[in-house]
Length: 395
Ligand code: KIV
Ligand code: ZN
Image 1 (cartoon, rainbow, N blue to C red):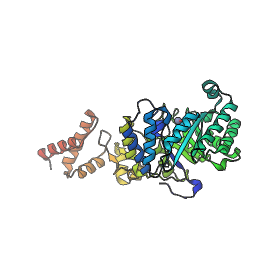
Image 2 (image 1 turned 135 degrees about the horizontal axis):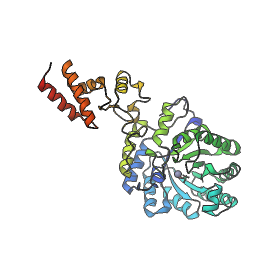
Image 3 (image 1 turned 30 degrees about the vertical axis):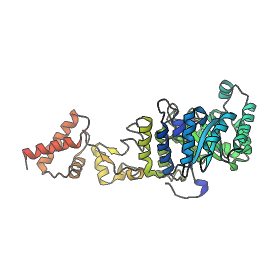
Image 4 (image 1 turned 90 degrees about the vertical axis):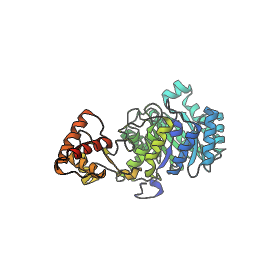
C-alpha cells in the first residue's frame, strides 16, 4: 500500500477487469466457481472496483455478475454494457444486489469507429451516450461512461461529449487506449488537456484503461494518472484482449516502489499479489511468463555468480523491492553454470551440509560440470554431489 501522502486527491482507484476484459481474451474463459474465487480474492486484497462481467452476453455471465454482487464485501461491483437500453437494464439488474453497484456503459468515439463500426454521426453518438447514461442513472447512482478508442478520438469532440455525459449523470469518465496506440507523454498531455477543458470535470473521476499492443500499457496508465486520471483499469497478470491490459501488480508496485515519481496511493494489499497471480493463472489456464515483472517465477530469482554474491551481501544490490512485499517468503538463488562459490556455500548451509575446503572445491567443480550438461540443478543433485564427496572424503 503506497501511502506517502494519503489525501483524497492523490488516491488512485484500482478497477480490476480480469473477469471482463481479461476473460474476453481467447482461451481465458472461467467457470462460475472460478469467477467467484477470483472475485473474492480481489475483494479481499483491496481492489476498489471489480468489473465482474458483461451481463447481457449470456445467462452465465449475468448469473456470475449477480452472485459476485451478492457476495461482495467492500468493492464496488461493475458490469459492462454497450450503449443500448437492453444492455443497460440487464446490467443494472445484475449489479443491484451489490452493496455498491456500478453500470459501466461504453460507446466508440473515434472517427474511424463511429463511421465504420457504429455507422453513426458524432451527434448521434453524443445523443445516445447522454440518453444511456441518464437511463442508467435512473436505476443506479454509480455510472461509468467509456469512450471506446478514446485516444484516437478528436479532442474538441471528446470535450463536448464528456461534458454532456457528466451533465447526464456519469460519475466516472473512462478514456481507454483501446488499441494500445498511445505513448506515455502523449497520454499525459491528452488526459490533462481533456480534464482542463471540460468545464464540469470536477464532477467525475477520470479513468484510464490501457491495452498492451506496443508493450506500454503500464507506462501509459501511469502517465494517464500523471495527467490527472484517478482510476486505473487493469487486470491480474495483464490478461486481456490481444496483447492484454495493463497489469494490476505492475501498476501497484510501480506506485509503491517509485512513490517519489508517482506520489499517489491505493488500497491494495501487495502481499496478496503473488497469490492473485497464481489463482488467475490456474483459473484461466494461462501460464505466467517466467520473466513477468513482479509475479513471474524469475522476478526474484538470481542465477549468476555476480548477482548471487551481491544479493547475499545486501539484497538491495539487485532487488528494488523485497519479495515479502509481494507475498513471497524469500528470493531464490538458483544454482546453474553461472553461479559462484558464495551461492553454492549458502545453498549447502541451507541444506545443512558443512564441507571441508577440499571437498567444497571438488563439489563446486563437479556442480559446474553438471550444470553444463543439465539445465536445472535441484536439491537432489546437490545431495548426490555431497554424498559422493563424503564417500571420497578428501578432508
Ligand atoms: O478497451 C476498451 O476500450 C474497453 C472498453 C469496454 C472500456 O475494454
Ligand atoms: Zn479493454
